[in-house]
Length: 145
Image (tube, helix red, strand yellow):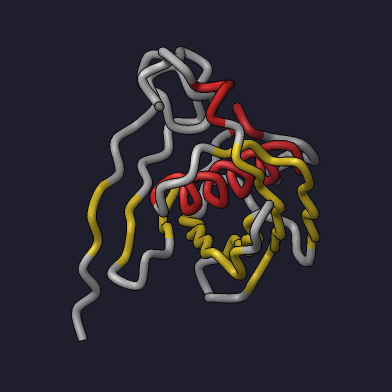
């Protein structure tokens, strides 16, 4: 079965996916048919924490962006109010890593998300859970409203 994915436009100066930001991690996001968000990337020495491994903050930023993107693609103008990141295995530099995020639950005042970062063998290295709330006032006249 072939999985169909749609490339998501980048966010200009975004730290994770913006092409206008010289310090951007440089990710391209895709939305799958099931509405989950997907990306593949290779972390470099610019993302290093422990020797030859990814900094935990870089992993957290990528999972936050993935979870935020899945909620934005669902039509909500949101910000994160809570992130929970669990590090299960070290993420090595120089290897193809996959990232996925999905909406877990929509409540009246918040949207709950989950995400994971997988190693080339398919094992889960980092997981994330997020709570996002609508904040359209923060995005007025920004191009994201």
